[in-house]
Image (cartoon, rainbow, N blue to C red):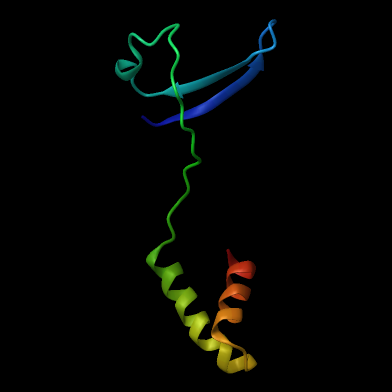
Length: 82
C-alpha cells in the first residue's frame, strides 16, 4: 500500500499520532484498535538512462584526466554529483 505522511502529533497520554493519506481503504478495514506492524520507507526517483550513461562516461574519463585510480574517481564522482 502506498500513501503519504500527512501529520504527526502527540496525544494527551504522550503517545505519537501519525496520520497517513492513502488511496484505498480496503486493506485497512477491520484493523481498527488492533496492534499492527508498519514499515515506512521513503520513495525515490530512479535515475534515468541518460544520467546512468553520463556517470559511466565520467567514470571512464576522469582517471585519464587526473591520473587517478578508478575507485577513488568513482567515489569522487558519487560525492560530487549524487
